[in-house]
Image 1: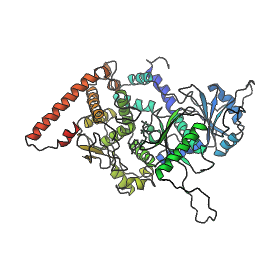
Image 2: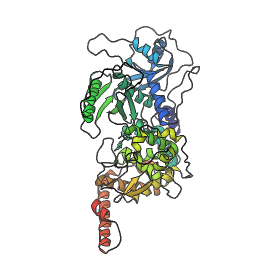
Image 3: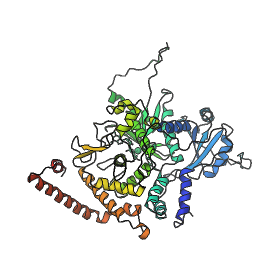
Image 4: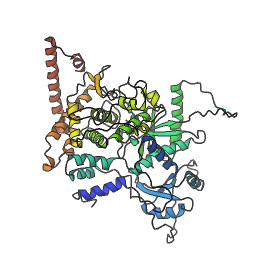
Length: 555
Ligand code: GTP
Ligand code: MG
């Protein structure tokens, strides 16, 4: 069925298995069943970090090697789960092996060996490979109830697969939901991201046993899709002050400015990744940026990484976004659809630039869902959330660094009475922004209203945690205009949606790029906009009350 795209339903079921049920577990196991959907951000983080500490990654010859691997490795530890995947670039086969506890992982590492070649540095790591033998495998000891997780659990659904799944749906609502279900990060991809951060922590564990590499961004905020990058903030050490201890660590003095210290540390961490850590490739140190980062590709876990060592604001933001995504089941499918649309029509790009970012798009969807459109709002304002937690709106970041949004989310008293379906909300999203006054208004999730722009920037979205900052400061006027043009296009497509009557209907029609005709259409759109603006100037000179100064600036 996998190759016969007309059997969309079957393919959907198959892919759902791929994305949701990535493993079959040993039935008679003393551990509690794995909570596949932990509720809060902190619970998810703790659960996944703990799971990564109990896991190793083993490169094998093929998926079939799992029997031999199980037979060997179960003499050293109690195997809880094994999951198979293939890397997308080099087609390497790996098996994630999860044990009962961390001690068993230490035991495995103690019992592992190096190749005596002198060509590589003999470091200890949780990333291993399984040497093949010529012995016959007739007596492999595998319990009957133990099965390997799904074949290649890290596979990203191809464009064709997604397209055929969407075509097979009954209506646009189902398309929106399906797009989310088949492209969201699955269990294997999530484990791989936490194993990647674990590798970074372990690399400095001798000197910094308390070092923590925190994943943030779409890998953990609930808006991540298969193949998304991994954002990491690496904290070398939190100070340990114990008043009753008379033995104090000798440490070197810090006599550099804070930014220089971070730079030096990042230089060193970059070198450690480059010289010693297996699988870390394509290391680029981008230290002159506003937020200095080290970019690298972890070829064993198949993840593109952005590692920073500055502040924890990204983690707080992920916590907040995670909370918003869990308040209402419609939020994540809508965000996925808008982000996919933006990617397909070419108004965003995974590399940073003058275009709107995925992060800004997410905030735009959340801000829209806070609006009372024809029905009550779907989401509360940040102000409402903070009030319930007992925080003031000022200095949110400083206070929330000590705090978890999602823990408080358990007691959040907000239940929307909005019953609009996904298609209606998507149309309303485009409708809302097609008439939004970007030239004089800023979007603020804190108040859930648009406010007057504090300063000139084509697109202004107030950072909910640091209210003096605009998260979309990078967006140029030209890119904003393209965004507005595509919004009108999408609205037009959705409003004239005839259902399954044409070949590419619903979301697929909306995703179609109009590249060929784009330039001419776009120029006529810009011409129309200029006409609109000059009309406004005429009205202005006639002494009518208006606020077009900002429009004049914008054009
Ligand atoms: P992907 O495109 O799937 O990677 O989405 P993402 O949300 O992970 O975006 P990205 O990797 O660009 O950024 C990671 C995180 O950094 C975001 O989720 C935000 O928490 C934070 N971030 C990104 N851009 C900004 C910004 O301009 N201002 C602030 N305050 N935070 C940002
Ligand atoms: Mg990211």
